[in-house]
Image 1 (cartoon, rainbow, N blue to C red):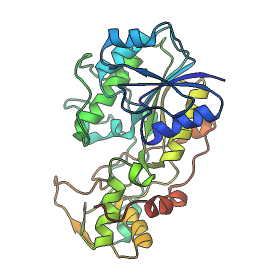
Image 2: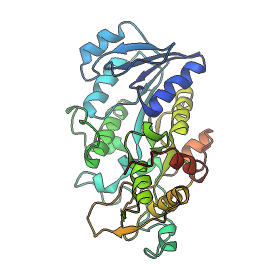
Image 3: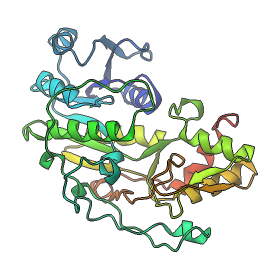
Length: 333
């Protein structure tokens, strides 16, 4: 039995993680601003994590085997957590994101080859659908980005406001948070760089899969790039299971969490079409124009080799995506 603190844990896969740990017999506590009551048998602490003194007061003398941080979005939050939890936990697992690799959100002036392992090629399914000649891109590994080597903006700023957040704000906040933790090699830190999380129907609060289900079901065109690149996905149950697994391990540093398979937006639309019984219609956007949520004009789909080598058995996107689409509300979009 482990003593686990989950910061956040009130919705989506964070909530599933809390239930998973409780059912495994762990002593689980959630810490948030009182956004929701925890499941039965789970302890609760209320504090604003940006307020260091309030966080210390809420924790009191408690310590934990593992802290899983679901809601660290800024370097300020990372700096507060690193100070407060130093000596209080044997392991600190932060949920990060694949968006840290996105070359479109990297600060100006960084080396052009920072994401050298990502190919400048589009994905094969786009070619098969007549969008553009393409080849399979390389996948980014954890070594593709070292936040510890990035200029640190300082432990300033607060969490973003209500969703949706600007992509560059979200991605850079996560990169800077990782950088703060990695500045202290003695801190037992893991950053889980999560792929796009899908499934759960209405619980999937971003509404990105619902965007496709709604538009394709209604016959409304989907905005895509001329040569969209592949991307990475993970099912919400698999994401919760991965975080629980990561909490049990001893490795540190960044680790990519993504199901096998990296479909592009055209393959996603075809999967939706198979479920809703309506052929997708596409509208190609011009260079620099906004497209639908999972249409990308650059490559940064993730390699999951490190986690696989460490022993986690990922599923395949093709196995769970139809079910995720089927449970998504049809009226959305």
